[in-house]
Structures are given as C-alpha cells and as structure tokens.
Image 1 (cartoon, helix red, strand yellow):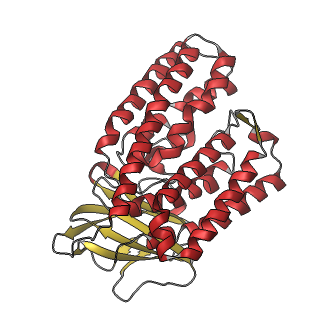
Image 2: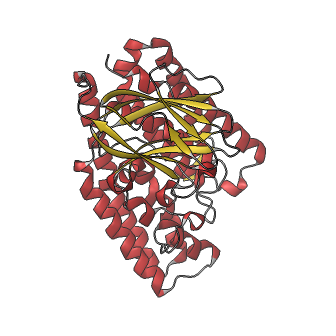
Length: 377
C-alpha cells in the first residue's frame, strides 16, 4: 500500500469520524435527485454543495476527465473515512453514506496519484439519527476483536522477521517476510483509518511523497531480494517496523468501526487485489503477492460472514451469490498453495493471472452491494 494510498485501496472504510460509505460504478447514474453531485475532471473536483446535514447522504460522482480517478473522503489529519477507486473516464459512481457531523475534505485524484484536488465540506449536526440493529452492533464488536487478534499475531511474526534481518540472515528473512504481513493484509483498513501508520510501514518506492523517507516492509523487501544484502540502515528499519506495528496494535481499541464500513472495506480489499496483487506490483521483489491476495480475501470474507445474518435476511439472493463467489476464489487460491507457502507470483502465467482477475471481478460486483444490504432503514 502506498503513502496516502496514492496507488492502492482501503480494505475497510473504518472512519475515525464514524462515517461509512458504499458505492458502485457504472455508465448509468443510479443516484437520487437529492444526491450531492461530484464532478471530477483532470483539473477539478466540483461539488454541488459543500454543506449538508448528517445522516443519510448520497454522493453522485461523475468522472468527466480523461484519466481514471478515485475519490476520497478525509477527516482531520488525512484520516481516511472512505474512498472509491477506479472510476474510469466517462463513468459514474454512486456512494451512499451515513456521515456524522464534522469537517471533512473530499479529494478527487485524477490518475489515482498524489494528494488530489480537494474541497472542504461541512456536515452539520441537524440530520436524522442513525438507527441501530443489535445484530450489527454484535458484528462490529466481533470484528474489532478479530482486528485485535490479527494485530496481536502480527507483532511477534514481524519481530521474528526483524530478528532475521538484524542477524543478516537473508534466507530466514525471505521465509518470514510473507507470514509477517498476513494479519496486516487481512485488516489493513484499520491501520489506514489512523492516517499515519500505513505510509511508514507499507509504502512502495513508487508511492513515496516528496521528501518522504522510505521505511517499512517494502524497503526491506528490496534490500533482501533485489540488493541481496542487509546493511546497518536496514537493521534500524527492522526495529522501526516492529515499533510502528506495535503502535497500530495499541490503537485498535480506539478505531471507530461501523457495519457499513465493514462492508465497504470488504469490497475495497477486493479492489486492492485487483489493482496491486493481480498486477504483481505489491510484492515486486519477493513475488509473494498470492500470500497477500489470500489474506485480503480472508479479511473480506470475515467481514461478510459477520454481516451475513442481516444481509441474508434483506437480500437472500445476494448472500447466496457471495457465498458461492467466496468459495470459488478461495478454492482457486488453494491450488497455488503448497503447505504454508504460495506459488511465487513470477511463476504464474498471464493466462492464470487473467483467471485470478476474472474471479476477483466476479466477486467484487456483488460485494459492492453488501453495504446497502446492511443499512438500517
């Protein structure tokens, strides 16, 4: 994942501001007449209004530019409230939201890079209060527990990886790299909701902002595989990686998690796979992309499984479809796993990558409807 997510996506929309957005993209706009229009172009990000009441909100995004764009909603400190990626030229995306009162920024990112073209918005406190469902409240509690468990398991795994780096043991470090990332990849949006942890731990070299020091997993990955050596700077970075992930671990109890945020995050995890894992960009030196891919899918399925009781009641056909698509993609991944290790991604043919891409797309379309199925009317 890149700094400010300039070349990647969020797995969950877990808003520190408590917001959650869901969306779908198509040539046809399905937004209501009351939707806030967002016209994104290569040089502008125009909103039909910048002040509106808290509660149910629709953002109708139209990409009028020549480049594929993405739209983010940021709370203070560039904490990601939500995002919608891969909005192609001439296409539209309708995002439904339950947003709490507060100040935010909407950023359009033509070319899906950089800080974006930003507009400030104010959400006032005079909207309707959000309704609740005890089953969804239980799902949120269970997901927070899951996120904490994943972080708790990640820290010792990263410590073992860091110890191998500091010992200069290249082969051991190679073996421990992918396992150290699994818990992070399953629940990455939790970290992204805090704004400052992901850039330090999971930025690729091409995602660096001007003046940003390159730290984290992918800097060490390059040293281990491409440079085939570990220097004193890498050993310091290994200790920093452990410290940064311990920080993430401690912050999870304070993350604001919502049911619709969980649903949106599940879809964004699939977008993360489509954008970075299928292309081989994420782990470009180690080629351990399939391990990250599988973790993203596992994290998405966990969120869906927790939300399924409500989603299945409202849309039984959707739940049946999602069950089948998750089973299919996980069965496909299993074919590439030997013991605890996935096939090196540089050994996966273009035809096989196309099969993976088709499976991700087949799951992603119905998964984009999950958030709507858990909105409390």
